[in-house]
Length: 336
Image 1 (cartoon, rainbow, N blue to C red):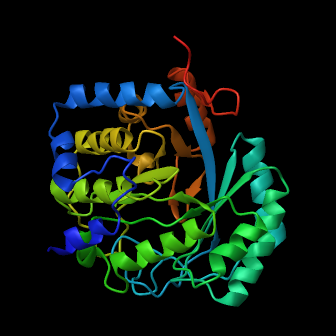
Image 2: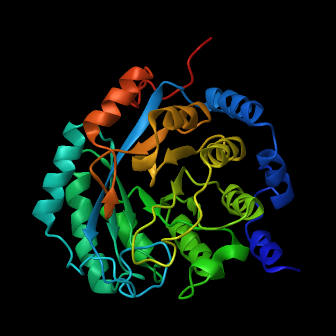
Image 3: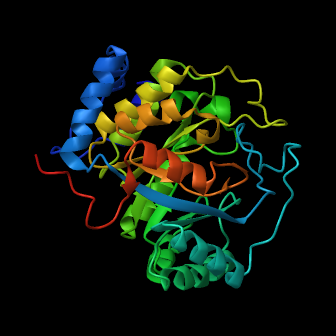
């Protein structure tokens, strides 16, 4: 049995869910481009209002100094990228940022910390931050790394709604990108998160010199989680000088759109988030991603430490495409 088969066997879903083998997902990638986008659009309309886009804002509440060696990450202490190690932000500053995000239309406030995993004292501080943001009436999401036993429950008790923990890439490509943790470590933390009753935000990054089959392996791993993630961020590698993947080969735009479409088909009820890398995407490419089933974006000036499209630019594009921020009232599929 291969490493991939071993890992995917741990992700086999409940019998009521469709099992997605890597070969089956790869076959979806091989579908003629426009046919694939059309099929994904049909699936999208069965479960969501295609005119509604879920808006989230992401704030780095603890930046830089991470001890891990993720080849894509400018926050690793191992690389010279110009990102300085900073301490955890004060609650008042975080709450003020959350208020601004809410005023601009964001319904979910996501907080990221550059840790391999938090210490118990960190969880205590984060819990106070979550409570303060939750009091504003926003959904809360956190990405704090690998969790120890009991931590997910503490975060849940504080009011956290979602925990973000990306699989990053396919099991068989993992060692090419990260050496300080294993794919299985990610799965273990996701298990703790689910057991605590938290919703899961889990996706990956494409454009890290992986093959199409490995992209299919990433999507299969995500689609076979039981239950499937409520949110699936699909990131296009942002090449940062000083990181090992700075010279990665550019991914053709059609391959990225294919990835969005395949994610939508295999995870029909998940939010598929057009995430990192959007700054470098022309409006036409973003529009095609929305057509292919993307229905969530990060909305704000920073995506952790790399640029993200400005709010005004996002609003202008949404107006051109007749899209609107998602609300509880407009989320459901439109009646025909």
